Length: 636
Image (tube, rainbow, N blue to C red; front, side, top):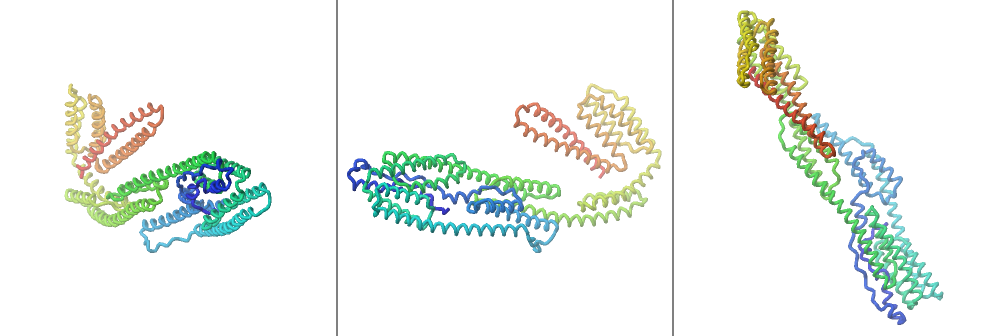
């Protein structure tokens, strides 16, 4: 249907429907002067409304944002086979938008993959897409159907124009016919009916055709010379027709599809304008009824799209926040792989959240998406540059550590114990200063270096065990400390007792090693007596736990591979700490989730108790990590 200007319809007045003949008839027939003495004034214009075509264009009926390319094409085929092509503009354009958005995303992913693999983007060429060719064929078929429809509509408009001109001519001819008045009135009403049933005409002819039609009607009424019977019949007929229009308009108030309601209201206004006058005492009443229904439909229309605009504004605010977060992440400086991976995870999460947010105002859509896209591009470009630089650094570190392996292997057979020990310790310190190597080479290279160092220190340890007198003396000293701990007498001051025990422990660790055959036994006895002393010590459990741990860690210091053992122990504790902190986050999130539920108080209390206990455990583990770090630093 042709989109005529709806403002012409909503400013319709009763005179536009054919009231001018009332004034003419009152002047020519004194019989009805008293009845038609009051002048018929035009009704108050209705408020302006949006053109229905603009409304439909702005808000698509369906949401295709979640469909894949294949699903979009299947939906396109379904629409072309099942729907009226005149109603498909919004859906087709929406399908087109999302289809090429999917295609662009695929090409962007291919570009990113080439960049991640170190390829040259200048060599990138989008691959031919069979689905795109199929989509173009469907779109071409749609355009052809639409063009055929437009041509048919234009042809029909011309036919309607010809038919309406013929009706006007026939109305003009009624005044020359010799038939009875009733027969003439019946012919006039039949011509009016044919006029109303005839469709729209070309827009350029609308004004002239209606003016000529109203002029012909006025001429006919003047010719009737105010025949009261005919006039009453016509007024009654027009009143009944306008009451029917009011009822249909009032039904449209309940229509949930506001665009459909506005379109139907436009047609009702077209019909109202074509109808003639009604009884003067009913004129204002019937007009107010029709106008009130129109106002309510217009109000529903305004409220609906106001809500749409508010939703889009809220979506814009939400996407602006995501842009700010993305920009903050993209501008930070990251120096470790772990930091980059965490930031990448956050960026991907932002992308997922972006997809769940609806449309923003059309005028803002391109700008807000460009802002978000630039933040993502800046981040991933910086990440790519970092990884390229790190890769180069790791390759250099690999060469440097390989050189240290060669130097350590050259020293492993030396018998100059003191000098070689210092040289190997120096190599170990140098090793630690060098950064990471490629992950695939890290373990092999480290095992090579450690093996060379361990071989020397094991030989040195075997050599030192020959000094039996020193080892026996150390054994005797440790036996004495075990005896003192075994007969330890407690005082009323637990803190003072703790200091005395610590003093004995310090003396223990200041004593040198014992023979290998006594090492495990003496250590086990020391461990058992220490545990007994601490278990009887009247001091809080946290300190006892830490002291037991301290005893275990201090014992590791005496082992030949103390550094390795302590590092392994630290890693195990760190894993426990990481898991515990992760569990605490889950418990805290669960509290927020269950706090929204009814009758969840007991469950929340249980979560709070678990969180408090978990936090205490984390403090204990952190202290243990700090103590091991202190011991490892002493070895260095």
